[in-house]
Image (cartoon, rainbow over the protein chains, first blue to last red):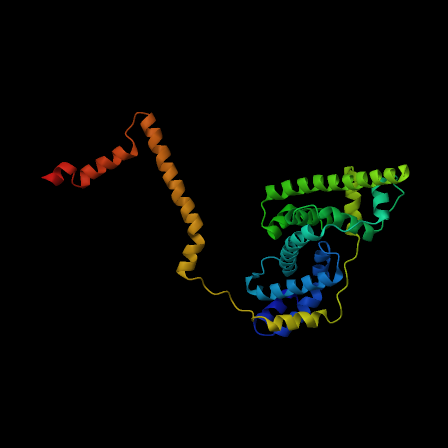
Length: 196
Length: 104
């Protein structure tokens, strides 16, 4: 089976249907990246399609110095960033969703045995992340969840190394404060209900 | 909220599987791709486009040169040496007509 470079060369020479193989190979990675920023599976699919169409249109800009997967990841991250910016404006109008009781219990508990499933954890983190700016969210997601280096984050976002470090630090602090506030609000609500 | 709890949260989220694409996802992408413009090499930029693109840098460079000249002039004047204006007068006296010569 041809590697990406051969496939891309064939595509440039007119074998456009070979792009299907590129999509097939890289769709898991693209879906995984976009899922970090969008919980709705249908929207993730739309964003993945947007990513591949943008990659197709910008294919001439891929110079082959880095692996195609890295370049495509950058395209996906930019698509995610644009999506977050659009969503941020919409979110300001409709407000935040609520988080499940399991997640709040886990957040309040200091017991190591108290476990939380990945889905609830993702919903909780998604809620907290909505308080961050789109770029801060991308930076902290790439660093903490995708395990990317500062250099890779700079390449994907266009921010400088210092800016990435500052944004990551600021985002971590803000996430802690948002989660603390969630716990505090929940405790106050429980106390109010107990008093009644 | 301590750092450990936030770290745990990141770890948990890392293990969440991504949604699996539909079987016809690839076909949908290809349809979308064929609807759009074909892959072509980017067109070379015209000189006017390049100038427009470079305009902010040119403005910045010009402003920098002006600031540097003013600073040097101030520095030279403060040090009691002839400033850039005096230098220019000397040059013009050497190579161009002075106002007196012009009157003649």
